[in-house]
Image 1: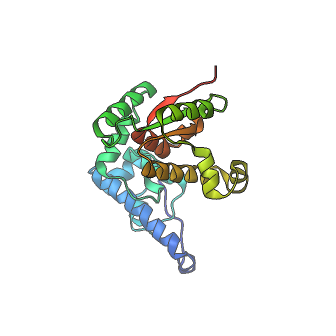
Image 2: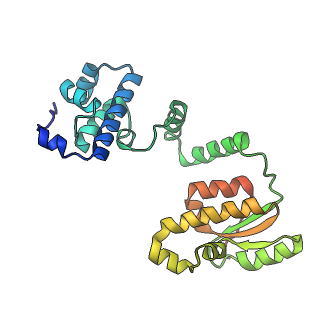
Image 3: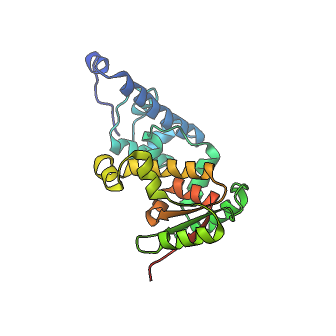
Length: 232
């Protein structure tokens, strides 16, 4: 069984407050996971191979467990190790259970589940006929078709990438080279939020890679009628 490494007063005194808070956070995650499953510390010790003393120290935030030990504990609790070490707020129980069920589904079943959720809980404000989003990779004709369709429908045409450049004061290549993809995705989401808030009727052209950012793609689906374009 694992045992705690000896830590003298100097070692504990040298621990930064933020690190101490994080250790307490991990310990609390372990304790909550154990109690939710109705496990005593002795039962968890037997299931994980980690000593009761170690678990007691860990739960009160005094232990600095290795990832291997935390993995043993997580497996004994039926959790992913991320559930113990993440510093994000703990998920509500119902959401955690729903995610656990979703993890068992095939890709096709996940798509069906998402469709059912969207039908049941999607915002009712969007009827699909006010905002139209054209999604596709470069060369799919988003700009030419978008301008033509917007003119016919008498609505403004906006290219999301150009809005990102306008908001940042930089070209896309500069954003990626100087600040990386994370900054671009953040600006992309902010610009889409601005467009949706400003226009009830609008034609929007977006890059196909937008769908890799779940929050932005969900915003697009919930506020626009989405049309996929592909180069022939």
